[in-house]
Image (tube, rainbow, N blue to C red; front, side, top):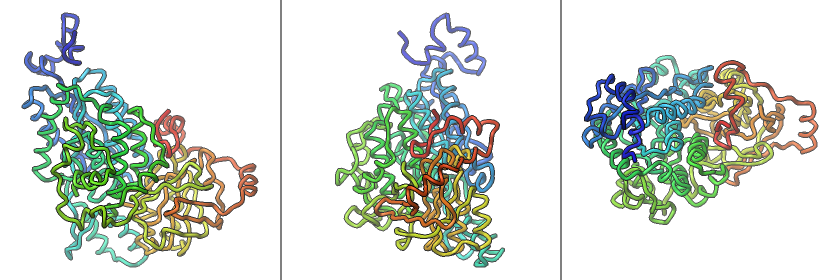
Length: 546
């Protein structure tokens, strides 16, 4: 009977050839005899959020050694969405999530690690590694790289990446000169770390904490602080306890834990991309999540935080929610303790940042799922980032078959107040890759149209997006969705608080249009994206591969 999973590569005379290769790595007999922990580091010299992860990984390894384990590090990729934004590179962002999950699965099973410490930080490799953790299901804990420090313009005003994109729209509209753009460019992103704001990376790192797969502070300790190094060491120590107790991801990532994650999501006002990632992670854990369930959770979960651009300590938020029974507190977590034990001493230090439940920013959660004939299977909006006057809107469709065509028209000043911009064939299959569209939404905001123009797409948005930006329209145009039947000038009605979105065209007219319509084929027909387009499901299912 084996004591450790890693005995499959080191125990008995039959495994001496394997052991000889461990010796080739420079490991000693004592190191080989210990539990072997895979340290999955997303360090790279490409991504600002990952440029410091070598130091985080080293601290994790020191913690593992201190607690009696032997760490072995291997890499995971990460795409920087900001650098990939606005060109063909963005097609490779969401699809990298599955590459991360698949490659980590391969390494973890091939080398029979006893446990894993995941070190992600940015948008797609956090959910990718959570998917891998659920799939492999050996003791696992996360330690992210942490958020970037806030930027400051020359006049002292705080700024961040979303302001940078909006500055481009302001420049195009003649509201900002070149020196103003330079001020933003040089000061918006002042340090290593995931971009400052409740964008997708920080949303997912906070939700990793909420779901129970990391220690306290994973989502909030800034990247440059020494506290982040201490957290990494403690995480390295903690994995040894999880191995000893055999606490596995699927013990932690239960249906109730995902319910907690969605409740915290609503309270924080997270990125709409969580509505892609939570179902995909849950699917790997054997839990099915219906996109529309988000509205039920939203209806009972107030939005307690307004972080840039819309959404504290995660445990303090959870403690607020637990006080009214809005989350499950008897669940085991990667701390080795229950949710209740984790949050019992968490204190809300500033009620202006984390509102109490009796004084929320809004009585409903930060995200809403809309349905109607334009999106029978649903679409998603970050309700907490929508101006009050745009919660209900009706206007003529301005139709584009790509982000590139739309952004050109927006920059030319040809979008009018009241318009509803429709961008289609940018979904998981049609893109392919479901590009994130921060450029058009930021251009609309930068030009001062965010309180009068809505944007609807079968693609997705950045967590930095604000305004009436409605994404994830399902089914997408490439799969025959009604968004592909919209004509220029058709009236579209949006009612966010009542979760409705309607194309004001009769069923008879839609049937007539469908009879003479063939969806556009995916724009890329070779390489990984072509394979992805054949396998990917719709956004309402988390754009998982089948």
